[in-house]
Length: 76
Length: 349
Image 1 (cartoon, each protein chain N blue to C red):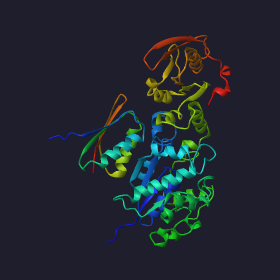
Image 2: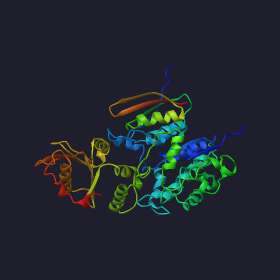
Image 3: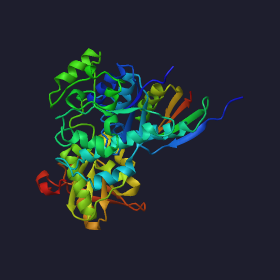
Image 4: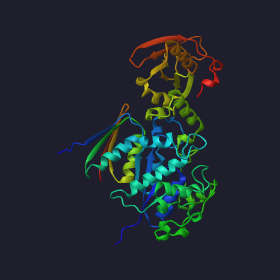
């Protein structure tokens, strides 16, 4: 069965705010949970993976369509 | 087995805080970083407005430093709380609108609260301060003041200049060896660069004037202009973000033009066009301009001439500029571009 990811809408926010909102949301989620972060600041494509690396979370995938960015994180 | 000694390091993204954290890590201390987002940080949000061909790497330097060090970095939103520091700094401003001493006290206090709260259980705070490095906040007489007013007292360790200061708790308790700390002072960067190379770092960020827009003369001028125009000292996040972008031209006290200077800035300003009257040339390539304030029809016509001056039609007899109001009303104006000398220097904020 596919797990339905949690969704964080960080569209319209500039970095590092999408990272901060992700960090705050993840603090309240259990390990193994998937989180989809929706963003529009292209900086998120660099900053969120970097934040995941330093905290040991798994970057499952990232995709960009027009101005919209979606980054899926698996919480460790 | 006893718990390891833990330190919270203030990580700005610059070299000194990176080295300070590394110095205590080398002594077996578990270090995690904190980085405070005030809204004035040079890092991070500027991704959206960076030029595509800029030489600086496109990254958040605080996160990059954390990766180099192999430590966790906790980025904390202090935008609202920081207003109290900037609007009424107890110790005053530096050369510009930089409340560096109050800012450092605030950040150490926040790091202390974060590090000692709940389960975090940290033992001391680490900063990259160096005596004599900054004229306002990093002086021999301000070091004890920061320790006292932040409440950190002798749990505040400055590994890069510790040997010029009285021993702190981590040194007295033997959590760190004072002899392995440093006695740097002054504005000479050579000792830091030598230490960086010794640690195997061959790259680091060197933002001119530090990591804060408030140390920038031009930015501070724009902020002062904002407060003058409002008639009081206050700001919202969008206000201070927009001060980082474009040419700011104030033809009269009741309105100001923000004119994009290149593609990245125009793209950034696009995100705000529904909140302001927005102007854009349609007969020629040209910048997006937002009008902050309550412009009259005559003001909009004048703004169109300014926009035309910065467009590809600057030498043409006439340029067509579209003006869109916040309620969606749109009109096209045929205007003669201002000559460069027709825009008074005093209009430029």
